[in-house]
Image 1 (cartoon, rainbow, N blue to C red):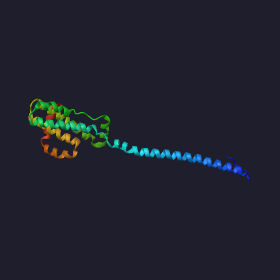
Image 2: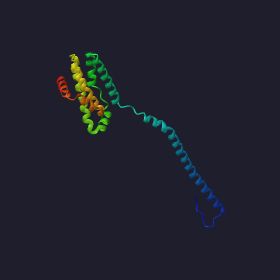
Image 3: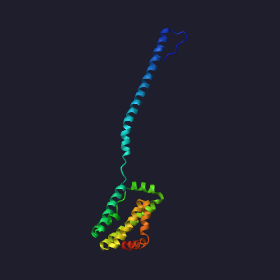
Length: 192
């Protein structure tokens, strides 16, 4: 941009005004382009956000939920087999309860972090369920219905305690007086 000397001609003044107008127009055009681009991005983002949010709200269920559903089906099948005295079926199903799958390591870490100090209780209940299910298998293999029922009674409070601690107390009270005896049988049967 040229500077006018005092008393410059009107022609120079016209050129200066034209240059100012063009410079202002260039900046105005650039500002308009930026504004239009930002507006377009915001509109696009506004339309796509619900689609992204829809995907984010559909969280895949934890593997633990599927494991627990399978464990529940196995326990129901064992209950039916015990009621029909089908010891062969109990022998086949008890190991599925004893050695149920575990969630992936990342999920297990999240669960244990969530449980905090109760993680040890959770693991102890899981170990009790494992031992009781193995004792149930051995008792069913020898067609000892009473021992099968006692082992099953031990596996249920442990399983409920591990996954639903609020319901553990009433079942433990029902088992009171017999649990020590049944635990000794289960320990002797499994050799642990």
